Image 1 (tube, one colour):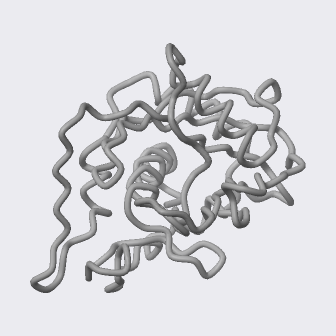
Image 2 (cartoon, rainbow, N blue to C red; image 1 turned 30 degrees about the vertical axis):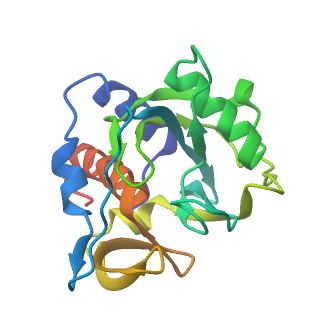
Length: 216
């Protein structure tokens, strides 16, 4: 059964005004260390503020959202699959950050995005960021343009694929090239989506499934 795009955005906008599942959704996707070598994140400074953009749009009676594969760099999230987003500028509100980063990283003009609401803030331990996921939509597929420096490529998630009962899979992976973890994940275009991105998407998944209990 296809979900009406307009109905979905209306239901989400209404639902996001109330108490969200937050940690319950996040914990379901939390990676568990395996073996004796475990990560040690000892941050001495307060977390930095950041936002990511979950941008929904319709295409051929399906609903999609863009993810990015980050370029290789010296950092905690090098090469990972993530939502468009980044660090807030001084005095910048979460929605403004998400829209600016979306425009910079995937080329979608901020002025074209309709805001639905925000998911629960999420603390990304490896990079010491407190991230606000912002949900927005376009009523058409935009022309995407990947940032040539920060983005290796854009991949496209089908919302239905992460809503299925069997959407969550688990696999042992090597994180940061050093730590073995048992990682719950989604699969998007044959890519593993795990960690913070999967945890934030799982909150969206839980909310949409709540709005459509008969379908999912």
